[in-house]
Image (cartoon, rainbow, N blue to C red; front, side):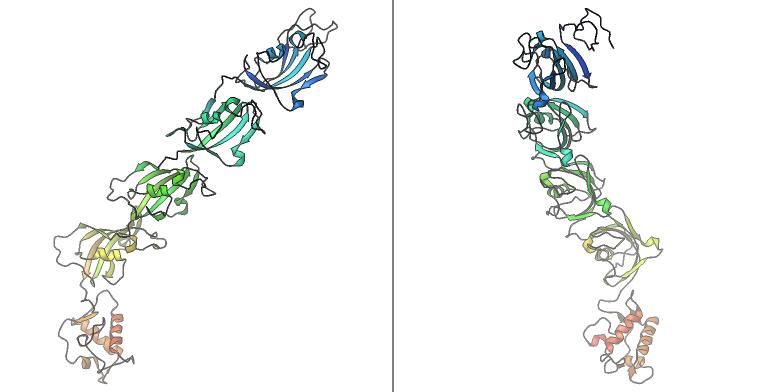
Length: 566
């Protein structure tokens, strides 16, 4: 409590008048009691500023004579231009937005001896409870306060760019009037061509994706004298807290960055190739939307044929196997104005981090590279030969699939008998024992679109490093058994051991196996000998009664060729 001292006047200070026995001291100047002061005062009212404030006007006895609250609108006026009573003009200077003050004005600085109609009597002291809500100056422009800048900024907003951003819109006193966050969708628009209020058009220029800034603007660059008719009053300063999420221009094409190209790149993808690749997909602000890695399988597609979005079709042309690159795709080359409805919003720029696993063309054949060839190479493998070889099998990215070395034994096949994939058949032809080759097998000559579950992915290009270890010459095409010596003229009798004029299966089998053992005949190598002999017997048993008669028995030379004839 401040004690009264007679004859002392408290002018233009913060005071509380104590009641004294002496009569009230007349006011010579305004008295201001600040009842609330905000923690921060970014700007104080100056002469010439335009202000918006609420007030309650009362007489010293507490009787109310006026209130802006009762009218439901602020009092809007220039300060220091004699648009107010002199005492209020003085009291508003130096106030901050959201500051609240109790102002006492003597009559000579109010309505004086004239009063104001029937409302304010002559020589009235007036009390005003004032709350300042807004202040601006006709000279003001857009004010920008950037409070977060991303570490990387490869591009800034320019006139005619299309942007996606989130914002909170408030009045200068902090009253929220709008927010894109509450609608859970960005505000998407062109910049600098009049689609926005002038202050926002200016305030967004120069922003980076990921940048956050406060954009403040006077009403002349906002909604002017009339406001927006609902949440924004007339003559209101506006404050937007903005985060930029996306940016592109309709003239943009795709951009390729962060390329990591392998040292060896003998071939680059062209339109019509079939590509297998992994990717992580995100929006320009880093928001993740999809990944092939999460599905644990590559994305497989033809390129340059419209099977994927246009930007990806372009971005996958000219890549090397093993290459990594970042492909940035504007929305008109991505998912357009509509997006995908869930993960990808409309008009979104897309960023794909891509790793090329392999690619091939449907017209590709097996690629054969001889890595070692012995000096002596008299005999070369051919169709029908029984070959024994070692191999290491992998995918194009080096992922190991299988190796005969793991089992300590060779892989053995008959060439031309469809016992391995066609690409391996091609790679094993015309080899010498001891020769080594490097094979690249496209999927249509390998395991095709389905692959091998758990081992070979669908549509995978295969890599084989092979070595021919041994080879047994096969029989002439069309033969499963041949004679090394002259054929006995009494062949049927020699088979018919019991002389009953019929050859039974056991007699037939014993005879053929004896010829092979004695070196008089040869069975096709690489096949089950007993199955071959069974087939030979069936071909001779014309009537299918389980026995061969002399009338049925014929040599291969005596009839049309069949694979298992004698």
